[in-house]
Image 1 (cartoon, rainbow, N blue to C red):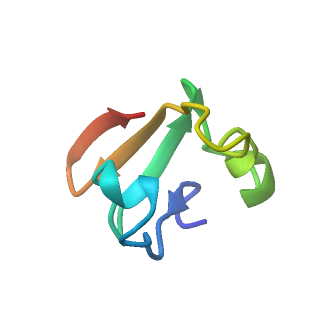
Image 2: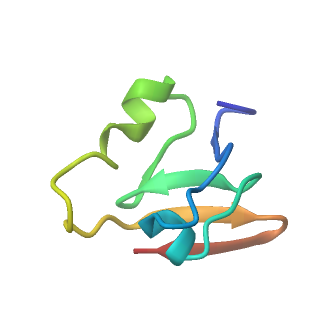
Length: 70
């Protein structure tokens, strides 16, 4: 967590996050439309866990650009 947001420390090149364009230094601001601001890390990432292949929409902040990533 950094500034109340989930900071991406790394994204595995062979993983789905990297394939979706998420990179180290990006911030996850929301999961499935629910803000992570004010949550602890476990609560913030809880919505990202699930079965392999299940789609999850996260809002990612890269620099000043915010985008939804599935």
